[in-house]
Length: 119
View 1 (tube, rainbow, N blue to C red):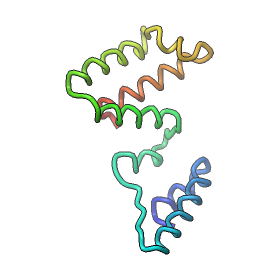
View 2 (view 1 turned 90 degrees about the horizontal axis):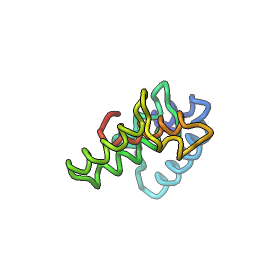
View 3 (view 1 turned 90 degrees about the vertical axis):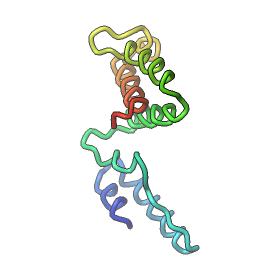
């Protein structure tokens, strides 16, 4: 098990995934392939406040960012910032989840963070 997966295995919510990835690494090694967790997302699961849903939204923002020019980042970022504002959120969080608009607002903020590169 790699160092990263060993760290993941110590987190209860990630341990099953770490074991599956360890099996994949073993299988890849048996055919001469190397599997690595790399890039901007590698350190995210180690954060103290790691949350799958917020991380997914953050990853979405990161991917969306790669499709936008600076004008697009400004326009989409402005919409998300307005809709996820802590003090005066827009209508979107409530439309996303009337039962838990605060969670929806947090997901919008995470998406915005990914778009803006705040990770």
